[in-house]
Image (cartoon, rainbow, N blue to C red):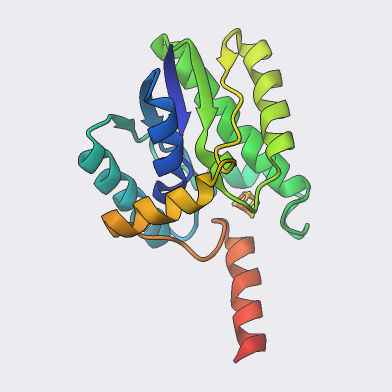
Length: 185
Ligand code: SF4
């Protein structure tokens, strides 16, 4: 099968790519307009470039358009992490991945988000299935963190010296992390 893999970040993509590429033709899609500020987006993108070069696979980098993402989460800015803002954010990234996969003639799409221990994998897979039906493609259901998938990603990332972020991505998750740090200081 030809799969377009939504890559949320390089560490999560390690396990996802390794497992999928055993049986499938996989191309990465780094679509993350949720990541702010720009310097952080560039750091995460650079890490994906390092990974794709080291493991010799193709990644597509669409333009960085955070203003479109802000429209998607308008009115949800102050909601806690894991709530409706995150659902809208994840659905948006998956829908755009599916549309790109359809346009480029892929059979299927999926996401590296399920490598993370912090994400609601049931929501991700449910919304992936719904989008797939809507777009007329297959969604590759995954829980990459299973069977030590997350630990594997930590190991690969250390081997390749990949940048690992300490907040989810958007400015709201960054502020939460900064508040947490100032409480600890
Ligand atoms: S916390 Fe993460 S998943 Fe939630 S809206 Fe921000 S970037 Fe998206």
